[in-house]
Amino acid sequence: MISIASWNINSARLRMPIIARFLEQEAPDILCLQEIKCQEHQFPYKAFEELGYTHFAVHGQKGYHGVATVSRIPISEFSRHDWQDNGEARHVGVELTGPEAGALAGMVLENVYIPAGGDEPDRAINPKFGQKLDFLERMTRWADKVDRPTMIVGDFNIAPLESDVWSHKALLKVVSHTPLEVETLKRFQDAHGWTDVGREFIRDPQRYYTWWSYRNKDHTVNDRGRRLDHMWASPQLAQQATGHRIVEDARTWEKPSDHIPLITEMAS
Image (tube, rainbow, N blue to C red; front, side, top):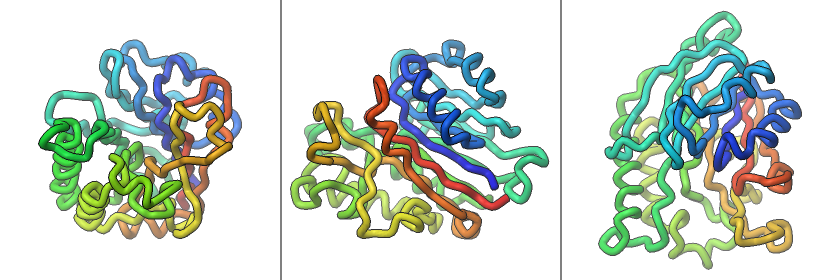
C-alpha cells in the first residue's frame, strides 16, 4: 500500500511543527502541500529530511501561493502547468518511480492550488472570479488529453455537492459553491472521467468538510465547514484506492491551517 496525503498548509515554514506532527502521526508516503508561501530555496527541506522525506518537487514563489510534493519513496518532477496564465506557482506534477512504488510505478500525481476567486461571483466586476473560471477551463483542456494513470489532488476551492457545505441555501451565491463554479468543475471532471475518491469512501450525503474559516474562533461550535480540498483519480487508477480519510483534529492543533489533511491509500 502507498498512502498519499494532500494539505493546504497556509505557509510551510510557519506551520512546520504541525506538518511534523502530522507526518509522525499518520506517516503518509507522499504529501502534497498547497500554499507553501515561499520561494523554492526557502522551503524547509532539512526538516522534512529529518522526518524521512528525502524526495522533493517544489514550485514556489515569494510570499504567495506555491505547491510542494514531498515523499519518502522516489519521485521525479513531471510537469509544471501555468493554468493561471500569469506565472503564479500553482501546480507541480510528479511521477512515481522506483520499485517502492510497486504497481503504481509510472503513476502521475498532480498537485494543484486553484484560485479562490475573490468575493463576488461575477467576472464583470470581480476579475479574480473570471481568472478562477479560466483556470478551470485550461485544466479541462489539459484533462481531455491525459493518457496516463493520474491522480490530481489539492485545494480546488470549490465545494460541489450540497453535503460539501454547511448550508447549501446560504452559500448558493457565495464563491466556492455557486452553480457556475460547480458546473465548471463538472466539465473538468467529465473531460477525463475523474473519480472523486473522497466521495467513494465518504458517501454523499454524509457531511464531509476540509475547511473552516479563521473568522470562527472555535470552528466546532457552529461547524460552518466546506469541502474545498479534493483527491481525484483516473477511472482505472481509482479502482486501486483502498481507503480515504481526513484528519479533522488538525484544525484544532496549535497555529493551525484553516484546511485539514486528506489521505488516500492505494494498493501497490
